Length: 165
Image (cartoon, rainbow, N blue to C red; front, side):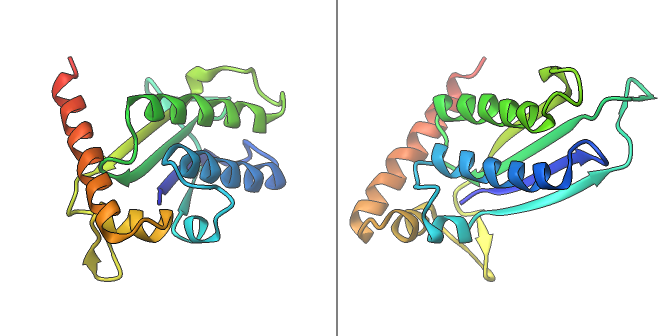
């Protein structure tokens, strides 16, 4: 159930390539969250907000080659360390592939930020939605299974954050 903010420099990609890229990034996030990218329920809960940048400045000067920023927001517990690394790598490669050789293949022009929204702060439809509710709806778990899985994932996410240097 990712919410994606994708920043793309104007003219960086052909319109068809851009649309295909946004679809691919959506599928990457759904897959790394542990859901089926073909699921219409998961896809309907995955939104992409496209931000067009006229120019990107690096070090105070405008850049000639396009730069990209992808902020992937997911509920706390949805991405472990391996999944976060996979999101970063897969999204970066998808963007470079979408350029189709129009620009130098340079991963340094791409920033990807997988961001977890703390439990109790994922809001939609006028209310906070806990991870257990999301897991029940998108993965088809019964309420008890969803609560147990959500508790394990959230605890693991919090434990991993305390281990960060």
